[in-house]
Amino acid sequence: MKKISFLIIAALLAAANAFAQDAGAADVAAKTDEYMNAFVKAKNAGGAVLLARDGKILVSRGYGAADAELNVANQSNTKFRIGSLTKQFTSAAVLLLQERGKIGVRDAVCKYLDNCPEAWREITIHQLLTHTSGIPNVTALPDWKTKKVLSLTPAETVALVRDAPLRFKPGTDFEYSNTNYILLGQLVEKVSGQTYEAFLKENIFGPLKMNDTGYDTWTTLVPNRARGYSRRGAEVVNAAYSDRGIPFAAGGLYSTVEDLYKWQASFDGEQILKKASIEAAFTPDKKNYGYGWGTGVWNGRKLVAHSGGIDGFSSHIFKFTDDRAAVIVLLNTDAVLAQTVALDLAAILFGGKYELPKERKEIALDAKTLDACVGKYEVAPNVVLTIAKEDDHLTLIGPGQTRGAALVPETPTSFFIRAVDAKIDFQKDESGRVTGLVFQQMGRTTKARKIE
Image (cartoon, rainbow, N blue to C red; front, side, top):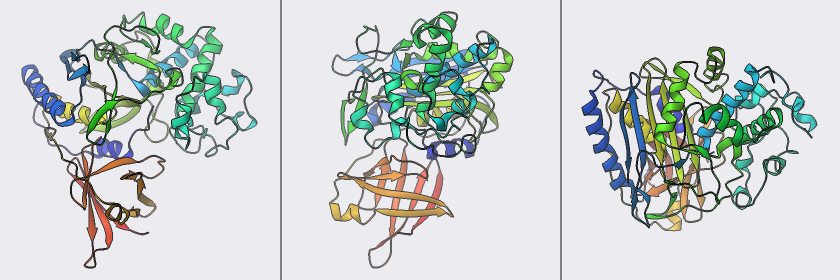
């Protein structure tokens, strides 16, 4: 349910990578093994990955530990929480209801939901699907850490922002909001007369034989379910508790790489959705976002994609629409963004350049050294990065974001972002005052000057 990093998306859509011809199946498998084994060692993390091309699975394997305490390994059938990949299924449920004449995506959502505030009266289902509603993101609330451990119903979760002002006039801008998809889940239940879980099982999971996909709960025994992990500095720890009911239709599902392969392959025909619905899902509105899918072009290849992040887990799916190709990454850690792994695996799949993950060492810095780096840094007019201090570490906050990525010090002026393999070097003048920074990621260098 975490917001997609603007740094990663920018790198994805602007990446310039030299490609040879597509690698052979054996070469793809060998290079994937080499990469993922290096990843496990460097990141002390694991997961499962699937690579497919021309409608054929080339790699489907698990790496690292599904349960580090019991020494159980990840496999291709290990089940992971998929976070915001759930949104694809929610959008499909909405489109199925439209195909059956139950709703129209241009309808006002309040036509189907009870107790809508006056400010929401003109908001359409389309605007919820495309994150253009202006409804605030409930998971971006300042006190969300204390709220997410409560046993809240979807209605109670939505109520946390129900009376808040809209972020913008509906339809005029884009802001990723999990609230949108929680509301869509409520709509699916109201219109269908079924629970969200039952509707997906009957209309999507069952027909596609996605037998290892379901709605996640704490109480249900789920065979082959991975345990989620986080990082506390260099230490791997169990992920913090959060109530499993809160994510709901915005991030409440678990799945496997092979089930998600079946899911993305269903869009190559009309197994679940009709052609018009598929085209609607893949058509961007604002910020290259359609209905539960981001859209773009990577090295000349058209794709749709999405990321997921939820306590202890990170996920990503690339579907290359003209190549019948897919890269699916499910990790049982929230300390690394799965899309960074997926980008490298896509390079392996198509014969591009990539680097093996490397282990990096963290050092301790005093408060004075950290405080000197805090401030705002201008990349370009109206594009400002914020370096903030949280507890005993620095964070990088991008434009329009409320949460930062933790910066890990390697030297007094050089930091890295563990989740995305990015690096920041702070620049100083002759007096030792910090005057700017240099950001490096995926071979791209961005400079910013300190403005306050």
